[in-house]
Every structure is written in structure tokens, then in C-alpha cells.
Length: 475
Ligand code: SF4
Image 1: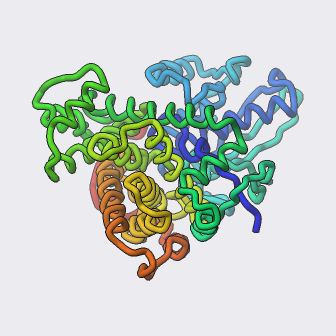
Image 2: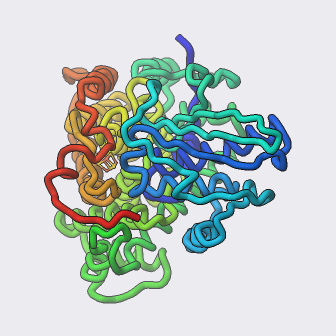
């Protein structure tokens, strides 16, 4: 069976909210298109670029900032490093000048309303998140490139859709949970050890550790910022940020400017069930409020579900025994392997599988990771992931007004709590007696995705999106 090699850094990507498939993916597609143009011809030969957005990308692209992301991608701005507070000014400058600077090298005429078309009624057959770039040269030659944003910020180019990364040979190739268990049983290694061995095929272990800790740093910064930023979320729904209020209440109105001091105060606050529950919710809300505000977040495995893993990891650090670099690294490695298995066996794209593919997968990733961290066996780790997904099966995607706010933000709190519950259940269970394996639940998730009505797949054509009346002005 062909094996797709997915690294921890494919699964966790630092970027900008609010959507991995509708913001980060198109952003990266635009950057890839620029690279492709440069390979094919001189950038100076280009006179115009038109962008066509199809399917789910067209339907919720406005709310997800797809047009903004594409413009930034065409300018070759890096989603990992761009100062997020500079984005509005860059877009305003394009709107005012009616010009864009391709790759920050070549100015061409560009009017967003004209050059980015939202084709609400058209869908490309390969994937609901398709986008095409129509490129015109000064000499009259025209050609197009089509990309698909297939979830979690992953992008494939038309023609490469069946290509599987095979350039790298991993010591432990894994497509399924059964494969993973096989390697664990054969070697006696923990899941995080197996993942690290595979990561060593890409780079030195020290680099992987450094990179994973940077991912955690970005997650923690995001939680801290979200807990200390007040106001309303953008987009017109008038959603008030709640992490700020909750943090303030739980901290008894005291502000801690230093993140570590803030964490140690949280720890000192006690260990009652309600107190911990409030904090886990607060952490998840904080991340997704940042995400909804076009803030810097880590895709994990998507942006809409970016709060689940950081919330569970911070719970592990503050309220359990997870406060060491080694434990944090192991947590994220194990989580990433679960995400990879779901991506290979089903999908992490809401446009393909609804919210079970986002919140469900992130919850399964977190459940597995914390189970290993709390001393679970490899089978218990897989069991925890299975339990977490089993109780997200069929979860639809129906964001109101196409914004990643309602139900998305609260849903991250649910995903985090379910992950912790699933881990506890698995830790108290004997996996030999489990009736449902992780591979079976992944298959069931995929079957459910195939059966799910398309209006529940990131289109805002069904569910809460049509039952909650709102009036947003067109912009
Ligand atoms: S409802 Fe779920 S899948 Fe849909 S945008 Fe929100 S978080 Fe993502």
C-alpha cells in the first residue's frame, strides 16, 4: 500500500486565522502559484491574474477571509511570520491603489472585487475547496493553475492530486492505527518514540524538538493573548470575547503580565472540578477567539478546531504532571500521528466531512496524546482516540454567516472536555474488551462523511447557519 509521509510540522502549522482550509490553504495555494509562475516564466511577463473560487470556498470564503489570504499569498507574504496587525493596511492599500505587488516584486492592476470571483454555484469534481488562477502574459499567452485546499492547510495542485509523498522512506511507515500498534508491539516503543524515529528521517532530533517547542510557544502565546484581549469579534455577528471575562473572573481581577507567573497563579487556584473545567474552557475559547480575529494561531489539525489541543495540553501542564519540555514534545508528536492517521483514512476537511473532521479529529488527537502522557499503554492511547471520535461522529459544519465563530468557538471547549473524558475512560479500561477499534471508527467517520448532505459541509447552507437569522451587510 502506498504510504504518505506526514510530518508533525505538516500537521501543526503556525499561521493566521480563521480557517485552515479557507484561509491558510488558499494563502499557500497563491504562494505556490507565484512559485510556479516564476518557474515557468519571468514574473515581469505577467500582466494580470484572475482568481476563481469554487464550491465551499466560494460559499464561506468571505467570512473566512479567503480573498484576503489570496492577496497576501500573491504578495508572497509568509503566514508564519507576517505581523498580523499589518494585514488590514496591506489590503486597504490594494483596494485604494487597485494594484497588487506580485511576490513583492511586480506591480499589476488588481481590483479584489473584480479579480477574485466567488462562484457560488460551481464546484470542481475533485474537492469542494477548489480555486483556479487565470494568468495572462503581456505577449497574450494565457494559462491557468488549479489548486485544492484539502483541509488543515494542506494544498494539492491539479495534476498532482494522486501524488503521494514518497520521496522519504520512514523507518515506521504508518497508514492505520493497526500499523502503528504493530510497530509499537514490535519495538516496545511508545507512540511518541515511533513518531520521533520517523521525524528523524527529515531532520536531526534536536531540530524537531526545537520546532515542536516553537509550536507550543505559539499555542501558549495564543492562549495568553486570547485571555487578555477584550472586545467584539469581527464580522458583524457582534460576538463578545468571553475568554477575557472568564480569565478576569478566575484570576479575581488580577492581571499577570508574565505568562509563567499567570500559569503559576492558575495552578495555585485549586483543583476543584468546576475550576479546572472553567480553565479548560477558557483556554479553548481564547484560542478560537484569536482565530476568529485573524490572529496568529497554530493549525491543529485545522484552524476552526485549533483550540482543542492547546487547551488539553495546557490542562496537562497546569493541572496534571505535564510541565516538562520532554512531555510537551511527546504530547504533540503523539497528537500529530493521530491526525495523520485520520487524514489518511478519512479526512480533516470540514468541506469533505463536516465538523467531525475538525473538532472530532482534534479531540481524538488530544485524547490520545494526554493518555500517553498520563501513562497509558499504546492500546489505551488508541482507545482514547477512538472514544473521542466515536462521540463526534456525524457532527455537522454549519457556521453562522460563514464565520468561524458560532458554533465553532464553543465547540472547541466541548472537544477539549471530551478528549479529557475519553482519556480518563481509556485509562480506566482494558482495551482488549473494546468493541470498536480506532480504524473502524475512522472508517465509520469516512462513511458518515460520504453520506452527509453537502449543506453540512462548510457551506453555511444548513443547520444553525440557516436557523439563526442575522443580517450582515455585503462587503
Ligand atoms: S462548525 Fe466545525 S468544521 Fe465548521 S467551521 Fe466551525 S469548527 Fe470548523
